[in-house]
Image 1 (cartoon, helix red, strand yellow):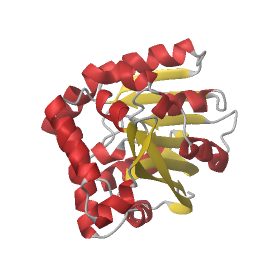
Image 2 (tube, helix red, strand yellow):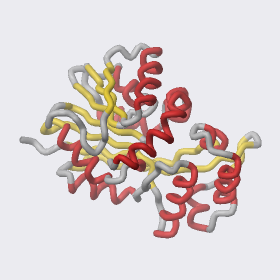
Image 3 (cartoon, rainbow, N blue to C red):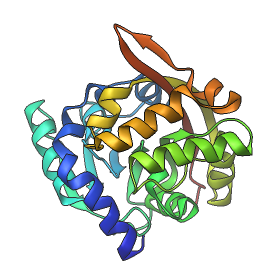
Image 4 (cartoon, rainbow, N blue to C red):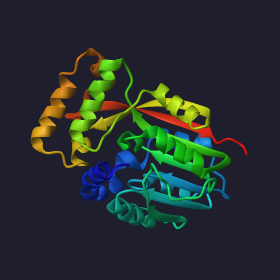
Length: 259
């Protein structure tokens, strides 16, 4: 990750780290539960959780594997994740600052490498996936969950513009099929690919990133006035008088090449 983009990520997430650690939207989801089912973590495994954010994936793994190493490029995120995980008894997690594009670990060091709802911030997703594949032992598992942009080219660009307006550190959400390409190019054999639709409370979505009022108004307009393709992707609805919308996620699991 370039220095400029790393600073942008830290500027976006550093002041909001505790919100992400406390977020109910990030604490659990069908895609995270499904990751645990598909991967079936083992008690003797050592796992790496890249760009851990609020630490929820690391916490979910902590009770199922022998040890978890949780990394993030934002120091405040690591502090918030450490406090959150410690408060839930996650004793088998250690923390370290790391760039997802250049992981500071020996090749083949981990039985499992995970990353959840972060790669859309990475300028070079292909390089990130190669690093995950390198860090996994031969026959080890790499599992990624991230937001994706379904639909035609216009819809993909619209959804990415929406995310970028809310968070300048956002880089790009890819269609699910591109994730299969990233894994294959990194030498990972894809064993599972599944997509999900996740509803978001618009107010909470903005509050987590401290979006200013004028930008919130623009985001709201992009939701309620969206053209047909993006409107179908967002599937906006109201619940208890609050605006909600959907974002799509992919869960992709791959196995590293055997020696």
